[in-house]
Amino acid sequence: MENKKSNYKLVIFDLDGTLMNTAPGIFATANWTMKQLGKPIETDVQQLRKFVGPPLAECFKVTYDLEDELIDEACKIYRMKYEESGKHIATVYDGMEDVLQSLNSNDLICSIATNKYQEVARDMVEEQELEKYFNLVYGSDHAGTITKGGIISKIIDELNVDPKDAVMVGDTFSDLNGASEAGVDFIAVTYGFGFDNESELTDDIVSFCPTTKDILNTIYK
Image (tube, rainbow, N blue to C red):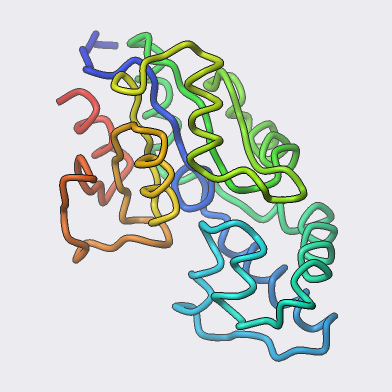
């Protein structure tokens, strides 16, 4: 494989909508949770897309406008069902493994920062046989108290990498805000759940990537 140079030392990936298409498992689990609470389900895919990215408690608010007093119970029900079945309904995006192989071959460190519960995220990475590409896989705790920026900063600190030498790759504004909070560059992918090809390129976003291959083109620029 051809050796390529990058201005970065560390590439941090989001999981949902960036590494894997987890939408079917997430949407089914979210609606199942609402049924258990005796609440209406959501069938509008555009509305369901809001469930991907933010911390879990916030997802139930922005997607279903669920009452505050039911949020904790909804999170408990969701996590139980997702652990049981939802996490197994996921596929790695086409070309993503080639991206990871290239980055590793060119001595870039790869890690994952996700708002998913950490143990579930690690299980999913192992199930898809991607664990060999990542130094760290960090996610949320059950309380959901750590922000995306906090997760990114935790990775940077543990790997002793300067924030200017790191870049976050994600598909939602939650990822963008986390990158900004942690002081790292951000690459937006448009094949996921949050951004689209019509989104506006700003100083906070290095580039938009319609395909996984475009991630490499940006990192090796």
